[in-house]
Length: 430
Picture (cartoon, rainbow, N blue to C red):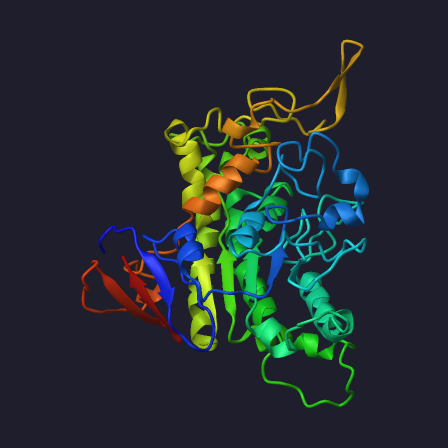
């Protein structure tokens, strides 16, 4: 497939379908797809896309210097600034997503964010405050979405030009960025890398089940009792003709909290913990297989697998090429080779030789990849967003499947490619 810089024009009349190809960046899609007019974004995930959920539930979790780069104060994000979900919203001229759990002045007219830091796909074994994981795992996030959907008419009753429920939810963009903490929970539960690897199919199966499950119909949120059950669950019913972006997980073995805690793990050429990245890549392989099956099961939905692993890993293998330095070292942290310690985190204080030391920023977040040992800087998030690519159309999927495609004839400006993928029809022009 030619490596061409191409623009995207969506021609399907039913919905806006933003499908990513290896030679199409998200930037190309956003700036050329005028028909891609999402009225709202609904996000499900963990700290990679949390815009204030965990901080609303547990306010003490964030303090300066979090937020220093863009918001100039903690803004519910586990970074010095914005996240990939912020750049997604901005690119579609939508406001930054409010956390569903933030009840102070929050409006959900243009979407909501159900993500919370430390969230998992499966029910975690240890939950805050007794453990290290969020009580708002994916199942709960879906339940919150159903609750929001049931209250949509009430919350928008007095707002002008409110879209109908069908328009609002069917045409929305649904984004998912979750799974890293499921792997992390296994790694820090005295499980071997092999045992964590063996858990991956069940983790991904839980994601697929939640994505299409029907048990939410049983939740007592339906204002009409004894309503006949719909064959599709609430999420798919509300967005069955919408767009779904499912992010894979990043190179967890390159993050300081893994490197510092597992010093004996084999390192790759970038200095990352190779066995841990192998588990992440296996997770992504199984996830891609699951997404392929979901596309077949829901042919009217544009379900996109977004490969963030590849682009994030390039920041560790060739940082200087992209204007970054010290990718394995946390900008905000304290101690050791990776400037990270479990005993004190970013924004905390530690006593050294009788003197209290504030754990602050390195002051160079704009050229650093890692912010606090676990999360990325705004600079890395921004670069990753504008350089993220989807799976290559020629890539062989699990079980020998390939994405169907058809090529049109070149026009005077170069190339037209018409792709019919699982109910989607798109035309690309140079």
